[in-house]
Amino acid sequence: MALDLAGPATDGLTRTAAGVRRAAQEYPDGAVWAVGNAPTALRELVRLAAAGSVRPALVVGMPVGFVDAADAKAALRASGLPAVSNRSAKGGTAVAAAAVNVLLYLETLEREAPA
View 1 (cartoon, rainbow, N blue to C red):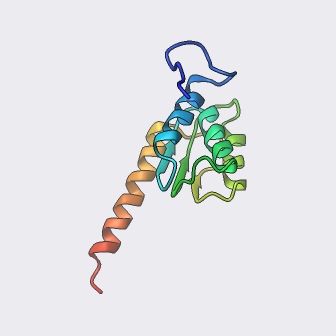
View 2: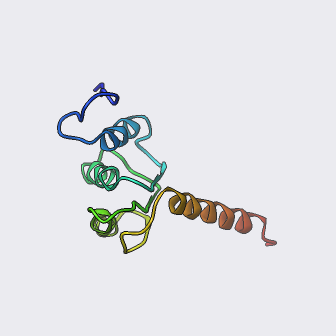
């Protein structure tokens, strides 16, 4: 399915949700997904996972904003997906990137720890 991401919303999707749908086609299994801005992107990812179209290894869901951000994060936590999120309207791209960086750092420490 080809989506026009440069034009108006397709099938009632926002451009960010359409982008998640397109990325899910390329990376359906085992990807780490980080969402730091648009709650609609996180909602689409949760919807795709519920439909069996994508199986993430981890979802870092930290969208920011007073419109639907906290509810989208609650939907992520309720989805049963392996996830990291916060419970407020706060978040953003920098917070999502920081969470991913901490997880990478912890993984590196674990790998380098003496046996």
